[in-house]
Amino acid sequence: MRPPIVISTWNHGLPANRKALEVLAAPTSSALDAVEAGARVVELDCPDMTVGLGSRPDRDGFVTLDAAVMTGDGRAGCVAFVQGVEHPVSLARLVMERTPHVLLVGDGAQQFARECGIEVAPPKLTPQADKEWHAWLKEKNYQPKVNIENHDTISILALDAHGVMAAASTTSGLAYKMHGRVGDSPIIGAGIFVDAPVGGAICTGLGETVLRTLGAHLAVEAMRAGATPQEACELAIARIIEKNPNPQNYQVGMLALDFKGRTGAYAVQKGFTYALQAELKPAASKF
Ligand code: SD4
Image (cartoon, rainbow, N blue to C red):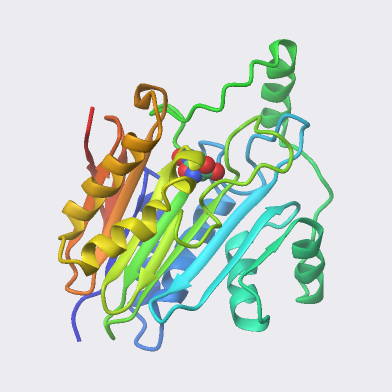
């Protein structure tokens, strides 16, 4: 048995990691329990308004949420374009554990939540989100750029003391996105991917760029071929830049962890912070 390792995206990774490490201190807990508990902290309280029901809405005024979980044995559950659910990451876990499916979206995901006894709240913006949305409506300037000032998704990876790895991701996607838009975060292989006995990778940033390259899968396959987690992140970010023009207009941050407990972090642009255990770190970047 060795000490567990937790790594997650952005400044809000710190409270998430703290919770995940607290969960992992219990001998019967698992990496999956830890990443779910960590992600739930940010779903409830996200000062950046980019995770959970307190997020900024899409262009039509609806907060629509995406989440995913995956474990190293290849099990996965995801929800996308789901409204009114306080903890989409837990709903994603229920999809994995209670259904024969991997991904439920929209009304169907809500229906499944109700069947599981989870309350589905009617659409409602927080006063701050409502105010910002009404200000945005005046110009309706729709430029879905994710940059270093827009710190958003919580993606989290944990390796527990028993050598089991799990990942989770939860987000409201991009503010003022088109209604129905889904990014990389709930798509297995794009926003998150874990494969024992190789490792896992998680992403944050402009989801379209990661969807086009299946960034997390790319990084894990690079590790399978012998790359260190750091090399794998750099390779995946290089591919994202190669396939998506104008990298000055978007940010993607990638984190990786292998089963030896080695970690990697890399981003397109400066400004991507991540939490490793209880410490916040700046990631190296291409630009
Ligand atoms: C998305 N990847 O929906 C998410 C948003 C994000 O940093 O992570 N932004 O595209």
